Length: 64
Image 1 (cartoon, helix red, strand yellow):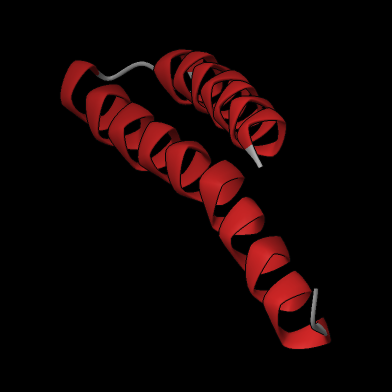
Image 2 (cartoon, rainbow, N blue to C red):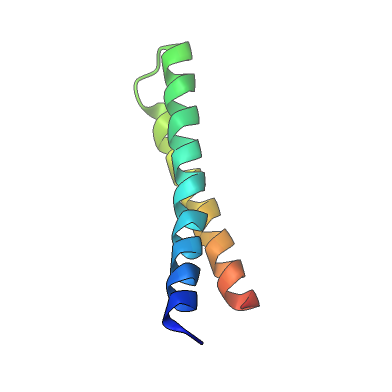
């Protein structure tokens, strides 16, 4: 397998983890501002997004 293909796979893997984290972060911040809570939903949804991203990356790696 070529170096460029390996780098592309690493990039996809990174985005697979980062995108759910960012979605959880932005959604949590929005809910916290809406409800007036400090960081309760931000922390919870960031952890949920991280878990979802890692699980998704793990599944993707085992399919390759």
